[in-house]
Image (cartoon, rainbow, N blue to C red; front, side, top):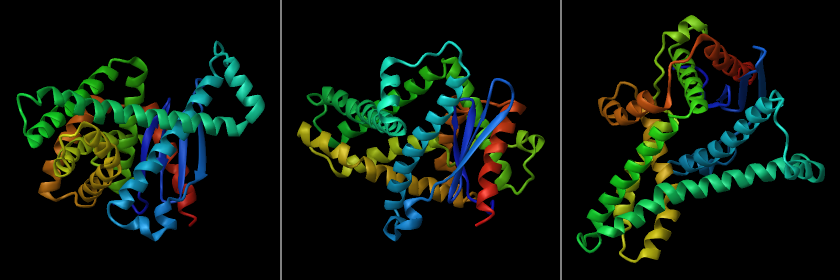
Length: 307
């Protein structure tokens, strides 16, 4: 295991890597150069002891990952947009920049994150619940209805994954996703961070966000089975309120699977998430994409090693 625990995500034509106290985004520009931006980002887990408790730390990591993910995606999108000669900002963007400056960007970022979260809850949590009620007259059992809801949720999730893989831009992002995993795996094996070494590593990783999302689907079936009711508005409220709990429990499993790499149970239960990565969300990167992922890791290590 690496001395510095690093995770990350793919962004537009680049990779973001996050260490304990710093993160770095590396993006390759059209002229071939790599732009790296490193900033301090201390988790609330480090600052507030309460959030070091199991479940609570998972909720904290989930929220912070959403915020940092939107922030770094915005950075790469802005960098990518600067190179697009055909791009012209809308009147609203111009007005917002003139009136609010950086504050306007933060407002847009916040609204984007909230909208994304609401859509995710609606599509993957609430919609399956409503569809499962169609079986209420035939199957009155709340427990069985919950199982049907879980099956619908997983089906929608897999269909969504299959759909987005058809998009060319998303395929490029999945290649960077593969580069991110390969680089982290190389580092965790205590190998020197070279393109050759990284290329030889697997593009799959137990701590991947894809695996996390799939675990969320499974954990939600168990949690919602405990807190079940036939009253529709109560079922809806329960699902919304328990999303942080489900994410917290899911994080604990992902964390356990990562720190126990030789545990047979952890390896077996991780297989569905690893399969999803292999089939959908990671692609084999080229050497140029690997170089970007390495640059992102080094952008973190440069600061973390000074601590």
